Image (cartoon, rainbow, N blue to C red; front, side):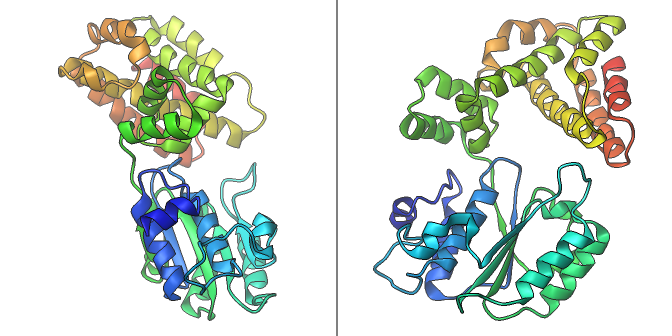
Amino acid sequence: MKDELEQSGWPLIGNERAGEYLLKSARKGDVSGAYIFCGPADLGKGTAARFFARALLCDNLGKTSVKLPCGKCPSCGTGLAHSDLLEVQKEEEKKNISIEQIREFIRRMSMGSFLGDYKVGIIKDADSLSIEAANALLKTLEEPKKKTVIIMTVTDLDKILPTIISRSQTLHFFPVKAGVIQDFLISRHKAGRSDAKNFSRLALGRPALAVKMLMEKDYYEDYFAVANAFFRMIPADINERLDITEKLIGKKESAQAAVRSVGRILDIWEGAARDLILEATGQADLIRHEVEEKAIKSAGRVYSLEKIMNFFEQVGKARDYLRANVNPKIVLEEIVINI
């Protein structure tokens, strides 16, 4: 099964077990009406959902001698434009997936298959469903139609209604070892050994993020600037810290863009703070930001373990404030002042 997974091109680095299970289910026709793919961002949950959908919609489904998806039949050729594949996600400037979006999704799913086989719907980041949208979706899951499959990708399972979870098959996707990601970058993307090692550590178990850093120089440079800002702020005075923060945030076009920006900064700073803990506890060989070794050592001399743990608590509160619609700039400045 693992060989078939590789031959079919299923892009599940380090989470092959989930792919093997899905492929086996498709082969046997033992498919659930609803799935939840749960795990941190950038593990390939969305890509796995699309590949599973393509396998179910492949014209060669049921033929044991043909790989799934085959990549050659008319259904595979349509890609994401397949008439029996729907996908819904949060609109760019919205906080949640709205009930209007889910009502339209349900309406189109209820029409049944155009080709007389499976109908597949993907809800990306289903943990951003509004309460009304989640309740509307639940009614559909309570009365599943034959050969209708709904796949939800989720980062925070606690935000999903327990009744939705109980009616779904949950597959967990886990962070991947740095060595596995490093080998993947070298073999699949022809990365140099030094870059592969650097990006595999920075990605913190997320293959898709490692690939993005490798392929998009601007993205990596922006990431590096945010991480570097954290180390520079620790020995700086309050005015300097606020000045650094102002440059990081810049001007955002909308409130949601600012929320996403500050959320990303917090993610990166948590990783940087983790390196300070590793340095302080004699585990420097495990730090992510090797290129910042000098800055980490310097910051560690003035930032105690107690302060680092307090920083993590502040980040947790900051995320709660962002969810409560507190101004993102104020949220970040509060952390910076008390860093």
